[in-house]
Length: 219
Ligand code: G3P
Image (tube, rainbow, N blue to C red):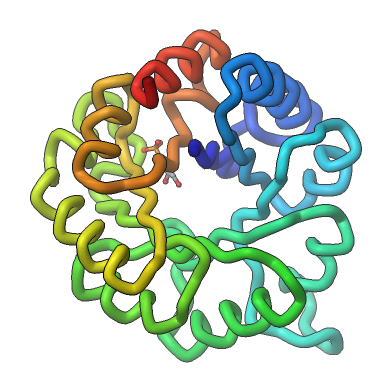
């Protein structure tokens, strides 16, 4: 499976986001592979109407309905059509572990699946305790890299992360700098069940070509 994180790239925002979702949908159906677009909360509703793909949101906040100006309420994105949420991405960390825990509990309570990111083995051990649907290992220094991927730079950590997460029955996703079928193949060989990718696809002039290339790594 491939999580495509649209971040706040212009190519992944608003109307452009919808165009990219349609491209991912076409490829997912053609190749019979699970591709999950992970969108800004503001684009969930339109995307959900436009596609049959499972849509996720990039973040929710640890809040209940009420006086919380500007926060993302888990119920709101669920109602718009999100099926799951990223939590604790290195670009959107919680102030402390308690807030992450609260957001994870709230998301699960309302019926959103969760993927929680960890920047290394120590953080992974902590986030596993929250029993998310997926954990993801992403070394922050490689996020957005066009030259070096997590698979080439940290194969040993991916293996360790896979052993750890599988021991708790939680599938591992890896991300950061993924940009080739070899990155995908290596990640799977090391024990990941899928990848999270952003810039290689979202910033590409030809996203379809890029995603088709990554998919080769699953064959
Ligand atoms: O969530 C995936 C993302 O952080 C990876 O970004 O640009 O390195 O593929 P990128």
